[in-house]
Length: 299
DNA sequence: GGAGCACGAGTTGTTACCTCA
DNA sequence: TCTGAGGTAACAACTCGTGCT
Image 1 (cartoon, chains in turn cyan, blue, brown):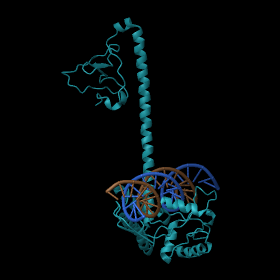
Image 2 (cartoon, protein in one colour):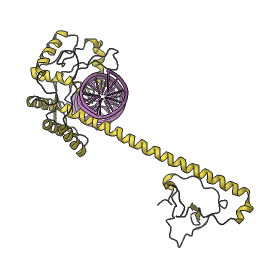
Image 3 (cartoon, chains in turn red, yellow, cyan):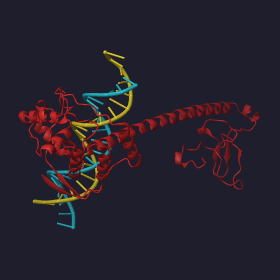
Image 4 (spheres, protein in one colour):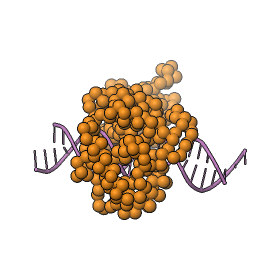
């Protein structure tokens, strides 16, 4: 056992780390997929029997014992509800290790070291299957539990250990389950936000493409006009574009109908200093493109 | 029955912080 | 006092397995 005292940003002041880590098969590294053992069951077992599991998973006899005892222990337990006794035990475990799950409480380095020490993952024996076929039961949170978690998530999308404990106690779940729920919730929220952002950017792109097409056509028309100046002279002054003589910026009058991105641009200057005059397309040199945030005519 | 999806949970890598030599 | 190594906790990203529609 290792005593580790720290004051982290979440307000945890004291932690006791029991070195009762278990070894789990790496789902990605091992071609042979074994049913993975929820390590929390190991922690249940450890807490119940106040013992630690063997570090080397080749110790099959101990694991078989564990398996039998766990199976009998799990009989009659609703997987969605944790007995009060277990909640209290989990609380203690959570206080001693904020992560509360043995596997996840291991540091990356330690975990990878143990992975390398583990070698053949075939030695892993599941310890929590209640019917002996190595199938894990899918936990399903009740509507009430989900609603409370949702409410809590709306308040704050991360939990400090105290909040986690309180919530776990209130819901009759293990702190680790609350933690996992919040992790998954954050991940899924982020995913949805990414989808929304992606959709928004797609629409922006479409609008810009459309505007680009329109501007290209306008340039084409103007070039055609330039090539026949006598025709231009007979034309009425262009009404779609005006230029501020002060800053020499081009803008369109409010009446021109266009997409939102081509909405007429009104100068912010006072009319005493700036007059809207017909824009002569070849009277000024083409302005260099400006960064979006430099276009001060947009209101 | 099986395809698709939602969701709980495990795994792995990274980062920040702490302790200690 | 500074510094680097090692340990720990927390988190994100990825993944898998199960249950539901």
